[in-house]
Image (cartoon, rainbow, N blue to C red; front, side, top):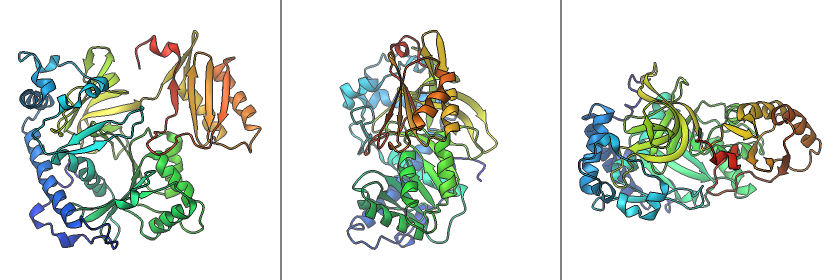
Amino acid sequence: MPQDLWSAGWLTDLGALALDDVSPPADPLLCRRWVLDWHDAVRSARAWRERRVLLNAARAPEQAFAAALRWARHEVPHYRDLDPNLPPGELEPFQRGDYDRDPTRFRAAELAARPKKSSGTTGTSLTVFFDDAAWFEANQATFSILHEWSPAPPGPPVVVLVTFRTDAERFVVPMPLLRGTHRRVSIGRDGDEDDAVVAQLRAHPPAILHGKPSALLALARADATPTGEHIRPVRIFTSGENLFADDIRTLADWFGSPITDAYASVEGGLIALQCPLGSGLHVPPERLLEVEPEPGQLRTRGSGRLILTNLTNRATVFLRYRTDDSGTLTDGACTCGHRGQTISEFHGREATEFRDGSRTVEVTALTAAMDRLGVPGFQFSCHDSGYVLRLAIDDGEPDLDTEIRTALRPVLGAAHLDIVRAPALTPPPGGKAWRFRDYSSAAFDVPRR
């Protein structure tokens, strides 16, 4: 493992990379842009390195932030309109609504950029433009880091993204730094197509199997249907959703592979990557996080809503952006080689407790009760009228409701509980898995934890 956790791909001689290092896909429809994509990736890798050199020159996080803000005041309308005498530390955070009102105010218009849309989990998708450096970082650099953590199988490494999207088979691109390929496969469309995906991944196990936890769990269910050996990737990489403890057990038991989780978003790219030694989610040097325990109070350590600064992307500029995710930040050195910020606890948008009158219900107690029952997946929400538990289980287990009510009574007391069964908890495409949500009026009466 490198002494610097983030050094992967940094020393590769880009001039020594050759197009022949990576074999194109056999389907001619997939390699129409192969040569262009290869040269585009190498050009973007150079831009990524130049951006890192620029950021490293600042040496300290506060210096990097101040330098980024100075640049943005010249190039980006939102920051150009600020008081020129405003100290960097007093920059007011902005939020999704500010961006939605006029996204162009956060763009450096003269930069060549490419758009990327979010999945629209909150109701409407978000479009962010990436410059070359940010595009390479988001789509290739992270996999170089992961690849250094695991021994490579024989042959060119392959990264496979598992998705619910229906256009997945159109996506195959070269990864010059890895001398491999990145392709996308779709799961959950119909049984025959799922069987074909499973057969392909069994025959050619990927170096990195990537996707939202819900998509990888769907792949595991499809892999359980045909007879034969399981899919055996070298490493599993999850992002885009909270990764819950029971899902970790399911994925690890089925695929038999180490799992690395990441905190990522379309606004922030890679925001944090799970420590290889398990000490939390490490924040790369190109990101700065702060917490907001109370509105307007920003800290570099502690618990609260996470405030993001993305120093890499200069096409759409996010300096002090309220993410609506919550967590706990620490700072220091880790034995894995990381120095800097770490998210020691990440809640995302999950509730950590419910207020039921004068009682506080901890979600850890609810999780423990459901784990003892062995329920494979659920969603638990709190409302003013009581609680709703949604299960992805058919009606073939009529006694389960009674067992659940008995197990939860010591936690919920006499509170009303509705149990609803659904064919799927997170309808694809674009949906995100969640576990605990608070829709009660009490959730809006106290600062968010």
